[in-house]
Structures are given as structure tokens and as C-alpha cells.
Length: 111
Image 1 (cartoon, helix red, strand yellow):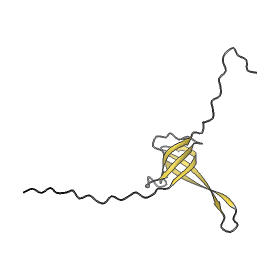
Image 2 (tube, one colour):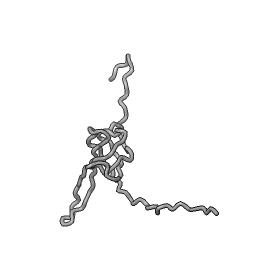
Image 3 (cartoon, helix red, strand yellow):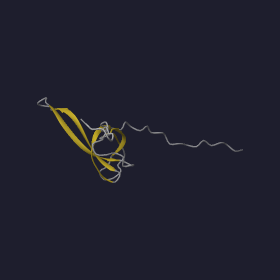
Image 4 (cartoon, one colour):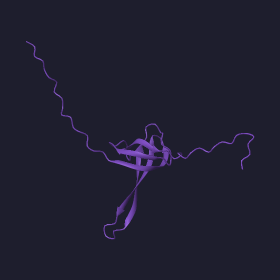
């Protein structure tokens, strides 16, 4: 008599909340890696003055699509190299998001 055996599965561990940061791309000179500067305002514990603090993170950019000056969203991930522990989630605003310069039509004099 054959009995159906249920496959024993290990318990599913819920992935913990990963840190999410927003910052500005300061360098993209490496392959698949960008450097993102994250700034935050912190109140000084003794003087109660608001201070701007900044940290730089090396971020994994698989497709090399981020450019210097882009505003990006990054998420914490497993260690990918000696310094990389963050990955690019999305590009929120491009550095060249200014409206394009209107081109001049030939024969028309600009005033």
C-alpha cells in the first residue's frame, strides 16, 4: 500500500524591513556601481542646534543607468562586495530634467 508523503518544507522566514534612503548621485565612474550622498538633519544633543550630516554609500546599479546629479532611491541588501551593501531601486528625478531649450527656426531672427 503506497502512502502519499507530504514534502517537508522549511519554515518561511519573513524578510525583515530593509532600510530605504534617498540621495544624490555624486559619482558613476565605476562599472555597475554609483556613489550616493545621503544628507539628513539631526538635532545636536547638547546645543539643540540642527546640523546637516551626510553619508556616502556605494550602491549597486546593474544597468549603469544613473547619472551624476540624479535623485535616487536606494535599499539595503546583502553584501555584494567589500563596500557595497545597497542597491538602486529607482531614479526619482533626472539631473537633466530641466525643460529643453527651444530651437531656433531658420530665417527667424531672435530678438
